[in-house]
Amino acid sequence: MLEKFLDIISHYIPISPVPKGIERELSALNPDKIYAENVRHLLDVSYETAIEICERAVRQGYFKRGGIEVRCPDNTVAAIVPSKEQLPKTVKCLIEEEGFLEEKDVPISTLDVEPFYQLDERATTSLYRQATQNL
Image 1 (cartoon, rainbow, N blue to C red):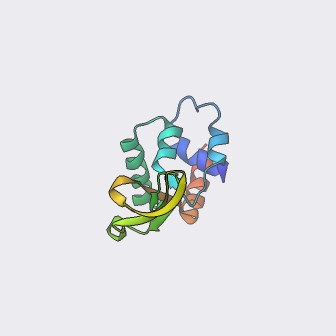
Image 2 (image 1 turned 90 degrees about the vertical axis):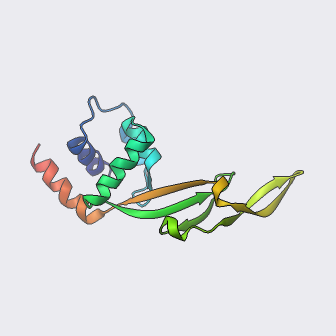
């Protein structure tokens, strides 16, 4: 999977030179949860450019939109929904108050809300074959 993903990226988004350690970082990615922040970091681009790259990959059929993840202040996932329209107004998070953890309703507007993508295995298998045949 790592080799396929790296070949696809380098074929369609030339990276010169390939950053040191990228193989290790790519191998740590979960193909079912690819965040724009991962793409931003790997390609050393802005967050907005990373979103554009992911959305382009969706349009071209290489990624699928996985959903939207909501994270509490302690970085735990409070909710995963298929689209922004389905976000609740609040989620329950454990919040420390006076040394005790209490479950509180926290407004979504105050939390990190992050889209994630999934690698479309069928499309990337086909693309990998094409990319490696052209090398």
